[in-house]
Image (cartoon, rainbow, N blue to C red; front, top):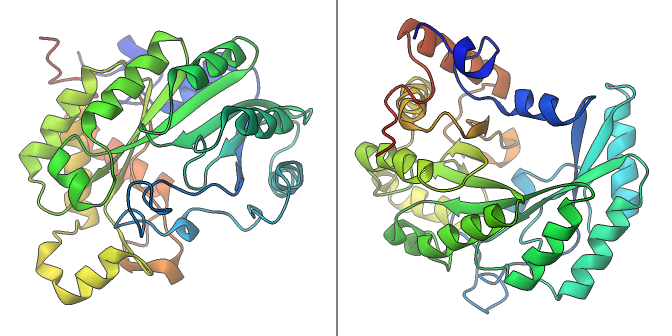
Length: 316
């Protein structure tokens, strides 16, 4: 097979998420981030304190997302922000900050329903942890999914329990497997979020991860490189023991991503490859690359290698 047009009907060599959205929505759809005031069980003491070792929530929360404002107000501010660039589009309410299912179901229903009351909101994207959902919540989301678009985004982060323990996640990989299987069983869109380059993980283990994820009912995938952010436990450890961290250069990471894609089932949509923290929050690595620039690097390397997502995928 010379290229992926045979597989996906477009000229990219991986199964990109924007093309998936074009299949299900007739016009452009933009996520609007919401901070609904949630916390996490590894912050409030239920499972731990201090949060995940790598996490500073400020690195991915836009300015208009603010827990002091109502869900409706944040949505409108987000729409006002994006409408300056895009005209005549619809939006997904993105419950992004912290663990957005970590509350009683009745409270969650109120928040989700408030978001869906806005006339330009056509669905929900809910970011959470695999250990913070249950069957009752998933049944409700399945019912909602029959009316509007619903995606549940799980912070899986690693397939190795030793890494999950090291980064203070407070859950196991088996809990992630359960969460992904239960959402898929109900027809709910799901997304697995993975970090490549966690301390102690080898290149072979990261590539094995692609094979393991491929065996699960994952609809879409978010990858990103390990970054050291200010105000995190990893910042302290990096300053004290930098040799513990094998941070990627952009070139080395792009080669890993291409190798990862080759082993990943072509059925999974890939939403992103990198994370972009604000400059003032980022300690290392500092690449100075935008997301679209990194995508171009990956596509160039795939073409140079005459490769594509799933080229080395083994269905066995």
